[in-house]
Amino acid sequence: MPRLRAFRSSILHCLADPGAAAGTPDGIEYFDDGVLITTDGIVSELGPATALLDELDSGVSLIDLRGKLIIPGLIDCHVHYPQLDVIGSYGTQLLDWLTRYAYPAEEKFADAGYAREVAELFADELLANGTTTALVFATVHPESVDAMFEAARARNMRLITGKVVMDTGAPASLCDSAESAYAHSRDLIEKWHGVDRLGYAITPRFAVTSSCAQLKAMGRLAAEFPAVHVHTHLAENHDEIEAVARRFPEQRSYLDVYRHHGLLRERSVFAHCLHLDATDRRGMAAGGGAAAFCPSSNLFLGSGLYDLAAMDDAGVTTGIGTDVGGGTSLSVLRTLGDAYKVLQLKGQSLAPYRALYLATLGAARALRLDDRIGNLAPGKEADFVVLDPHEGSVTSRRVAHAGDPGAAFFAFATLGDDRDVRATYLMGEAAFERRR
Ligand code: GUN
Ligand code: ZN
View 1 (spheres, helix red, strand yellow):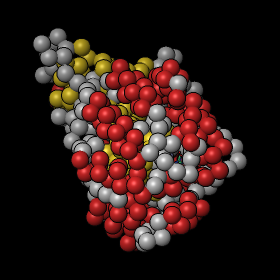
View 2: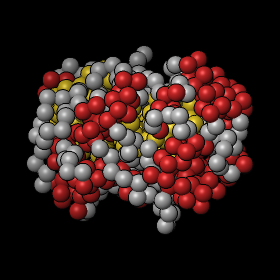
View 3: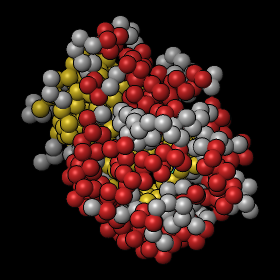
View 4: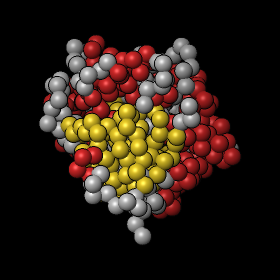
């Protein structure tokens, strides 16, 4: 017997990129009183309650969420689970921050038990924040990858992670070699990629911490396994960019270092992309790479302001990323609020529905998973979030006065936090429910 579920709620999602314009553009679908029907975890029908309730079989359990807002599961395109314990650490920019906070935190993941403990906590926190899919940095230790995949698998999350590879410019305890990085990454791909909802990402940390030989080995792996992701950092900080230019003087740009080593291709996701020129932006789009826009981190580490309009114009796909622990919140909603502020400083305006898009369908496109997730169209995996402002809060008053669903969503992004996530569903099943 197929497992049928029906949910009655206000429902908002994107069918296409709504673009930069404000208002209610074509790509948005909204049902004030909607019904979402899932069959064995897949969306089978979505529409107005008036049309769908009559035909619903009396045996199907109807979950009544009227007064709340269902949106697709949020997607975090760049986050580091081992940095949970150094989130919000004071006083440094990128390269010092790595040395002072990130690397010591990551050294603890040599202990598989510790890795499991943090991975479990991290997975639970994602769900409590409405995040149903994430592209995640682990550490150099293969056990840290096992721990993250096991935690995601136990919860049935769609999650992508991979072993960090570094062989220079980092503590020896966190370094591997070109050969061991290749062998361990390959073993992990064979063990995990495509198991349930899990995917692997080849994860050279950044060009600062890999030799030419190691980048080349990762490029070879990327060619051998085109279905896996490549996940790295690009052009985040000026000192970082200078270090890359010194290490690879024969390459025109930072992006060219990755391209030269076979790491720019479809399913390559580059975090930050703050200091690119027009040639790089066009090259990234032509090469099939996507960008993770990490505004919280970019503000916290003082890295710079993402140029969304220029990336859009060049045809680069952008998804949102929290970049915890450089970013200061696992909430994708709150990160969208930061994105709005960053773009204000660029003289750009992040329209409410575009913000929703960057965290759902746009993010799914950046990860090339939009055939499975990103909205609630029939045929998609039924991952979704139930937003419900916590009682008596400023958010609840603001949402009540919003007037239209875009304004309500914008209020959640600017004022909200995890307390507004009432429940998170994975493939039609409650994976998190907030007790009130
Ligand atoms: N660049 C290389 N590693 C990191 C990291 O851990 N965090 C951030 N924000 N940037 C990086
Ligand atoms: Zn990062």
